[in-house]
Length: 233
Image (cartoon, rainbow, N blue to C red; front, side, top):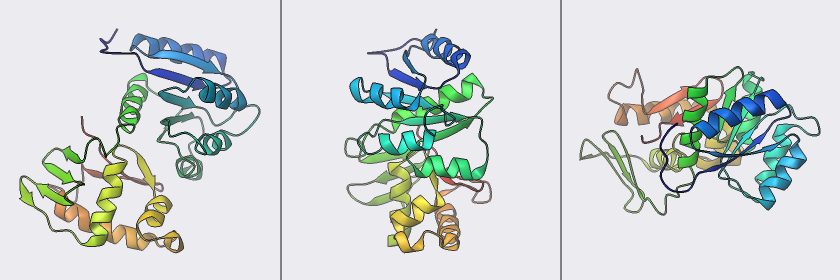
């Protein structure tokens, strides 16, 4: 069992498959989490409202409503990190879940190690950038208060758009951002289909921030879905 410091995080599992809930409970409790369960979407929403969890693991194929609907209803009032765990592996399903507010998406069958890693990253999303205005990842340093970017201690000059794009990634470090989410936030709602803008600016950022832009390690591509800025360890 992993050693934990401080209170145990509370995880709500929303899945109608009893055997999977039991498997997840054993896995998560072994890592120091407190686990609660819900077998339907409505039960999950009600539980999250009455006993707010630190994390939610959500299936999409629920008996009473689609998991995407659950996500949208949760996001009307809650910012709790949600990791989708689903047998659906089509790009459009991943995009729909992420656009509706999921923090990450793991397909079944899954490895326990991968899921636990995704949950740890999702937990770090709850740390607001206001509390941590300086973001550090490897030799990259982004000061959101001073609006400065450094690599290996040297100032990096970014255009206004490049900085806006990087700031969005920093605010959601470790989370997959879909093409539409990024375009809407940086360029505006009329640009959500202009993915060529995004490819160009991602290439610019990689040229300035990556040790090897051809093999990016900071800003990685989620094929057909979007991009992810790695989270600090």
